[in-house]
Length: 319
Length: 295
Image 1 (cartoon, rainbow over the protein chains, first blue to last red):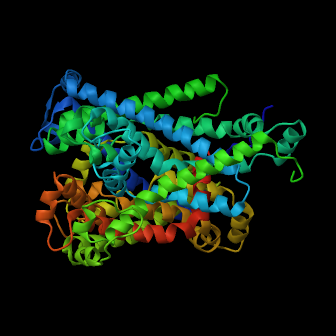
Image 2: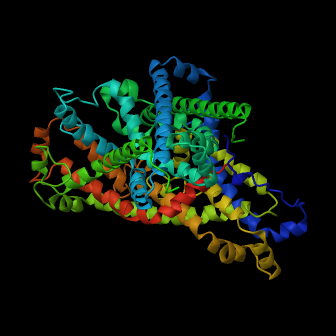
């Protein structure tokens, strides 16, 4: 059984062909002036920083500026990739990005499907409202809460002790082994309800007659989830997965920065933290820029690859 | 449907699902409620542990301490200011841009959209951006909070998707009556876009209220310009760096400890959002659905 979800965005956008003429320009004067202002803004705040990429190929000195700094080719990139701690940050960023992506994805879908199975409208509303709450809290607050919950006298250790699973409190923030799971859990805690919104919307747009037909065929709840709900939200899942693959490397800054400490540095440092540390704190702008460029390029490559795979399999795609 | 007999499997499913949802709600709410309880509890008493959902030794001292801390109060003012000003600026500029690119007849419609969509995928990165703002004289200034994020391709696309759904005939008939684009934007399109404007305003406002990194990066040196979240972060790192609770007790003045003060500050920081978001649900649900629609 397969369901085709109608995608609104696919509505054809046949525009009347407008040719550039003085009459049109005069008529659209206001629009053109405003676009010009907006483009100037965009050039300054979004495109001008791209010119700064030149720094990665220079031995950039603030006093010499972009024009007069010494050009050194790919030396900074060579330095970057011979730095073992940078290679570790790549591993950490990718690992946490992928773990978070998978964990939050699965939890959001599971939550949306299970929430949809609650028949009482009131209960559904209450649970959903509560589920959004963590999304609105800043990472500062979330990490503060995590510190409390996972501290020696925190609730997690207390439960573990009461259940006799441990004799002594675990110091969660001192062991590298716990760091990635903690980050993944924090992401799941924060975003499950929020990410589920879109799946719930997709589920409501599934034709109810399909469920009725499935019932008549004798399908139980599981069968209906498996053969109606999941195929129904498949296009949504695919498009969101695509949109998020490019963000895998962006998923690593705030929480790692706020939760990391000297003891877990080897697993907590991400590319963004590396950039901050070398670029801002040590004022080595060239190396910081080089690391940033590497991140951007990998992100773009990931998006293109994901898009190609989607295309080949006949799924939804971004471009 | 209702008359359908419930099978055994169905019952098991309902029970498991209920248990799952209850656990979900507990895990979501407990940490917040626990912080609330600690914030109303005597600080030194809280160090003994064992406070869950209800304070043992009631006090308002944590809150009075927070309100006496100048940096937190100034931070709160800055946070409110950046949220209000930042949201208004972002809403107006994203709405204007979305209006322009959703005009079917606009000459550079495709080009202008492309110009902004590119920014979703490519950006200069931290260092070039940092240097740019520095050169623009935006360090140690309030502007760095509200100017850089004014237009975002994502928010623009959300509004544009909504505007594309408004029938062209409205614009055409207004034009026949002699209305210019300014009038069409203000009097015809914008009133119809109130729901999507609310959505984008909510997204931007939450982002503004919660951001701390820009305060740390650009305005760290100017105590009058740091935000509430950044001050909260400083409070947090001072708490976690305290190795033992004995040390914390020594440093605590009276009956408050860094932990209890932080709990109070945390509650005050989340208060505005917690009070507001349940009423704004329909707006962000719309926004998420619009934003998820491709390009």
